[in-house]
Length: 158
Image 1 (cartoon, rainbow, N blue to C red):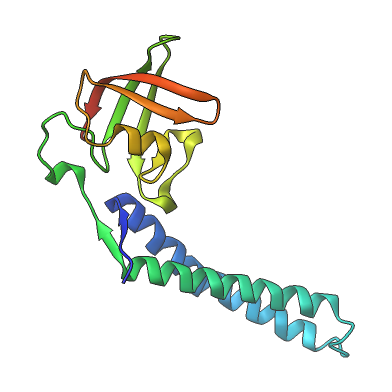
Image 2 (cartoon, helix red, strand yellow; image 1 turned 135 degrees about the vertical axis):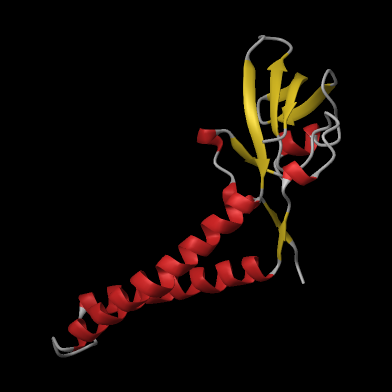
């Protein structure tokens, strides 16, 4: 069975999405299919085909979430030794050695990742380059624009 690392917050978000899909979206789609059937010939009924496509996407997402929740490995960084090392679930403050620009990243599971809000997947090149390092260490990370060097300024267990 594949394990899916996630934070407690990410686990709760997936559970909430699953509940929304099962209790709101699934019944809404079923109603739309029933209404479209009433319009007659199903071969040329665009509303029916669109609703069936929505149903397929919804059911696929439900199966995906259920599989991930079933294989969830919930890791709470507050329960880990807080020794300044970069591990799953921490927020790390890094500084680009060349430009001096600082960035904050929280290392999270695949489904939680959202670079726009500073959450990166544990499988991303940046996270892989930082995990295991400590405050004050330097990390060389291969990025699409070339090799980047960062210094780890702070590791926050929040």
